[in-house]
Image (cartoon, rainbow, N blue to C red; front, side):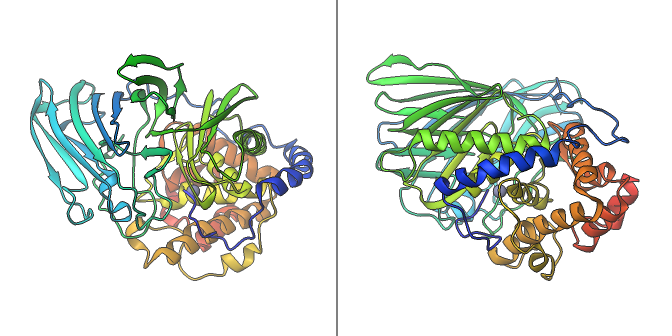
Length: 479
Ligand SMILES: [Zn+2]
């Protein structure tokens, strides 16, 4: 995500000005990256890793009620664990403290193996039913065997502002949006259930494997639905409603926005980009589509081909709120600043494709997305950020407050990556990062995976250790 207040303290470029800067940036970026598009010499594979064929299969069926603030739904999960399980756990993001006012409830759970279930508080907002939902199974399910669970749920959205400011869930006059707005399967392959507590700091806290996900949304017919995945044309459902469907074979999480959007479509190097802007937004859908295209080309020039065949971008506020949230093959925007667009587009690589536990290692996606902003703009005095106290690494429970989190993870984290690149030269660093991206594609990566990709660049590793992003133990695993 990117917060409303600019975490790096950098002056933001307005969208129109950003496009101008881009003309110069594009050329230099290509020249800069001309020698660094291939993988590092020690890279074990030049090919992007394929997603796990045994990943979960999830069908999400949403209905936005006519009040436009109640979403009912059913989620069918076919889950094949890589370790034995006796329970299935879901994370209820709308019940987090920063989303206070919204509420997600589980109404029923079904399945041949399902014995029952119950909420677990996990430091959720008081008054909500809880932050986690545990489904008890009748038997221990061995690794490699599929368990089917079906969950009915109700999401109630408030139009009041939540502590998060621009939030992943919301209702306005002409738009309703819900991201992470359903019980989120919270399995980390190789590690098990991610049952991390919620925290007061506003940021993501999930660890989700990619899932083969199909989404269906029934909404009042006057609304346009924009969501994660490759969308089909809507079909009439009768009773003044339409049904919209989408498929994303590698979704960690999804967003849905239903609004009176103006839309624009553009093709960027094989990726179909769909952009929607609510009426009265500062940017037209067309301008935002152009900015998104520029951002995709710039980020792809540094980090390799765009991860998905489609990208959906929904600007759900007039643009003055700021802030944005990354989802799988989709972006939810509260603002239209070009730096923000680049940041969220970069998350398609760092979060979307190369995943991480956003609770345990928040810097792995946020520092990289902030670092990636430099493809469009020079970093602002990275030395200042690097000199800040505190380590870049740490879990979401380790930050004293919002400022501490943003300064260390976004500001100092990005500065450490810039400094590491400076220390060893752009070509070698970019090649090593490309190796990290391609080998860790569609997994949940860990700091030691990055350390392994940088193993031939000890000076870069030293910078990251110095900043507290990596620790020595990561290096020994990597070495
Ligand atoms: Zn971010």
